[in-house]
Image (cartoon, rainbow, N blue to C red; front, side):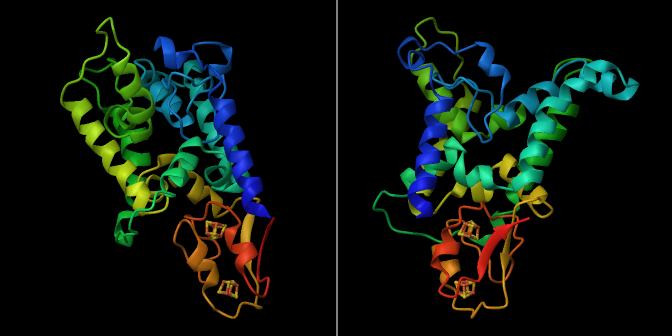
Length: 283
Ligand code: SF4
Ligand code: SF4
């Protein structure tokens, strides 16, 4: 019975990431020591209850820092700060690919809960899937690193600033609504991000895990690393090509055709569905 176990792990991860309950009343962001550690998933640092850091957000923050380009080009020790988020992302991906997406990521669970709403299902063209690689390489890496007003000026965490619907819905909206001191500005960017978040939330009710499929930069990185990860999915010659694995897959992939798909979140739903036990996982 994989599914109840997986749900229990997902809810435990959601709870463990959000132990600062009072943040939802005060509107304050937790800044304790645990924020030095990453959640293996996507969850905004500024969510009022969050006690952990998002690896994608931390990577952008370091890449956007004023000193990083100089430190990288001259080999200064400050560049070693990058090792923390990059090392964490690499360790998670090389060990198990997108397993964290399927079992731990709190925003993955949020989308699964939204998908339980009784709305009509829709099909999104497959051609949108590569968008998440643009999110990773352009918005998480290249723009924060190189887009600066002047040389030596700080950059911006562009994925967080212009895209992330998890950050908008679970940090931006609550913080703005509790902002009695008027600290937050809500201009064009806020309206754009709010619109994007509404689209993703509505889409999540009709498509399984749309953010994971089309936008998540962590999913993109872990998917690529998953091709060579220790834990991988395998399909044996016993497969009779019935397609039942494909019909239950939350990522809409045909593992019987592509066992090493970078889209696979290792949720193991297909393992129990296969009538001839052709699907397995392991090193
Ligand atoms: S292929 Fe199997 S393990 Fe991978 S996401 Fe689909 S159902 Fe889950
Ligand atoms: S459910 Fe099993 S037998 Fe059917 S297509 Fe998938 S791997 Fe092959």
